[in-house]
Length: 146
Image (cartoon, rainbow, N blue to C red; front, side, top):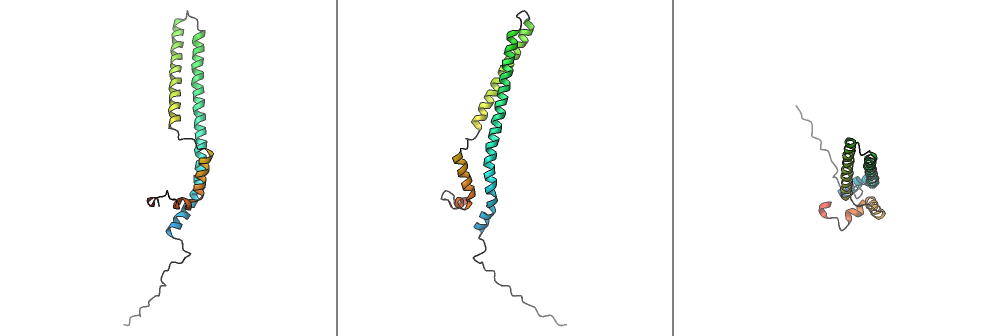
């Protein structure tokens, strides 16, 4: 029984041409879509900040109105109606406590918010996002960041 001769396939050596991208270039190319996302995120952060502040302002308005209303009700009650007056006074005090708590929560919310992004900061973020290779090669970028 004769065995078939082995064919040796000649595989051309894989040589890296100057046209094939390096791993650095591949990473940078993969990061390109994030430019648009980052730019959009900046706008989203600002619109979310505005929405949250509007929400808190409405909430503060509501508790202030409730406290003022409770005060008016207490002030118009006849002094002869002690039970009614006591109940209205209690409601007024509760609304003042709620108003104070809401104002404290709002103050805490404002302290926890990151600083406002002014136009200069927004433009800086957008220019960095648009030029990822410059960010990659910046002196402030450490080797561990690559």
